[in-house]
Image 1: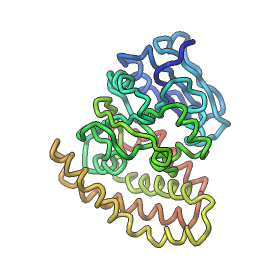
Image 2: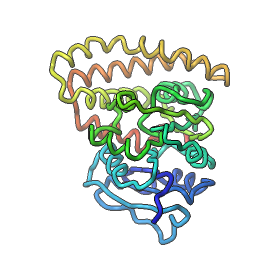
Image 3: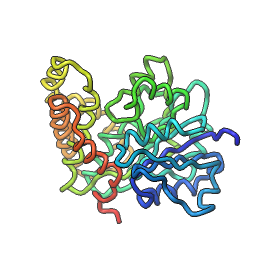
Image 4: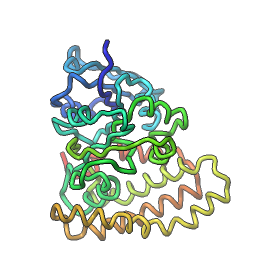
Length: 314
């Protein structure tokens, strides 16, 4: 079987949460050049109807042990994938029909990572926009394409040999606490931003869940990041964590300004960003002090896997 141009890894606890994403992938203009790698976190492989995935270049159904974390599932998917580039998708991120075509036409040996352009799938208020800009503002479709200096771990197509190498460096390479950008820089590798490869990303927008999600994600990220650190280094980061909102706000300011030049944002978006960053600082402080926590990982994973539940979308 020929090597696919692009493998898409999707991990979930049940196949139902992948429905919208699979529909979006089936609508791709280049779906015959895509391999699907569907990772079940339940301990049993997904069961799909005969012929349901025949439009793609191929598919693989794999599974972790029961109760596997999202990071473990994504790592398994990357190791299983056969494509030249491997894209880690999300249950709440939906590619536009020409997304894969734009990624594939951008493939070049000089790019170790190709980052898609991210837009808001539920632009229904300041909370949604604040979450999108905090997480993906640097890769907004409102920004110009070209070579960039950072990449998110998801919604990015990584050259497969680099992706495998990253997992050899750390089993947490595709977990939020690992610095993929730093690894790319150390290896002297380059990143392309391709805003024409558009993905609509769903963001938490219900106020009752907003700060809890930001806290849990930051707590998990910091816990993963500081694994194995000596106590004095963790203490130093904990002491510095109250500075996080100010540092991140300064970094976000030009990005928010660029997006506001392109579109009208809800009036309370900037205050919501600042409140969200305060929750991030609290989560990182707890993570650096307390280290990893399995319950926090499960909570953060639940927000990721079922993010649409925490929005006004049906």
